[in-house]
Image (cartoon, rainbow, N blue to C red; front, top):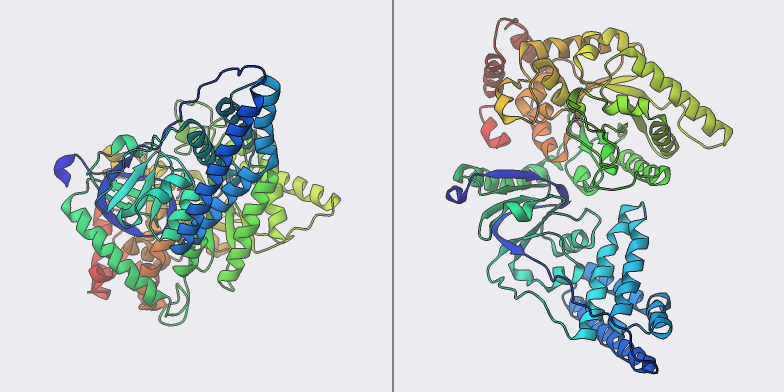
Length: 595
Ligand code: PEP
Ligand code: MG
């Protein structure tokens, strides 16, 4: 295991849920069919058209055979994919265009077909909707079939897949996916792809986990490396050490048990005495909504809208955003009477660079990011606000501003929001007039001056991921300074306390949506300090919920007092140790619950 190289964990898109461990199998793909291009002799057009017709018939037979074999295996998703290929093949516009090239330009059939597919692909590439852009893989797939029939080129890589393995690939066409022997496919980890790709669909229907959008997993993994694939959270760990493998196995088992148990209990975040700390899920496009529900989330406490911008050339249109926000709002409403979705407007910059939008900056974490970017690009902001407002007519949406550092930013955003509302009024477009508007507290200035901000917004959400890095001046993603990245440092605790105090004084709710809330020892500390809601990745909800079920408000008050009594003259580590002691005192079986 670890002897093959250092362990690395890559993060991508959670594409098909589930956990699996196994050896890597690097799939290199079918590659291009070599296509000759020449002008045919005058008068031979009919022969060429006949060749094309025969190739199309052969392709049709191929596809029909494949569909019936998938039907036998009851793989409905695959059936639908290849039925769509059949429809594309039968679309007279497609074959008609190639026939015209043969007739009018006397092009040979394979070159005519390639040009036709190139044109179709170019059309889809220009589309904004990721779903349609994904269909390019279908053109690739169908093109390969037709060209293979025309040229007789097989070219399929010899599949040496003889043991159950995790398939590591750049991307896969639907044909490549279904051709892999099912019994040996443990899961998929891919450089490219998306959660709406056909591989994603097929992986889900095959019941195997998948992670896509990993960037360069094919470069990082060698055949035979041990891979831990977590399709639920979207991570891939390469060459883990023995302890990591063991805890991964445990995680798999325990996730199953805890999720089953949580679904039987009271709503997530209900304390023993019936009071509540609402537990919400963090969410972004690509996270399966069923997972959020399955883990018991009461709503979505952080919708990271920037994911709609990532990995693409063009910005999402108002319509595309509207559809995504509306879907999330309707979904949140279906979760719980408290269900709502906090849509955070575009939080780019820092560690989330968007091609074409993010400028090169020497210090991006302190640069023109997030709300600063939006206020300096009002057209982008306005479009997003319109989409959010329009979606608010369909379900409970809260609007949230990221990276607020001064009151002017809240005021300027409010002015723009008022302008957009006025425009919608003029157009007689419905929206929720009472949509709450809140802000992230993740910059020290906002926490220090929380009382002033509390007068301007309807809720606070503390983003400890950024707050800790800015308070401690320790990059959240840099291992070399992770020692300094201390959520329980007294300086951080002071700012949490100030923020919670300011929220309470104004009677507005306050949540924590940073990853610290997912650590039960720290998350429960935030609840003890008066935070009303915790928002975490869905998979962490059952554990938090299970622990909270066993605590009362009096327990939480006691926990807060213990930490308070430590004073300021302690290290972050000492505070954490005291927290751990208190939690173990309450839960001698904590290790069994938490993993
Ligand atoms: C945070 O900073 O804590 C947060 C939730 O936002 P993000 O991780 O997206 O920066
Ligand atoms: Mg943040």
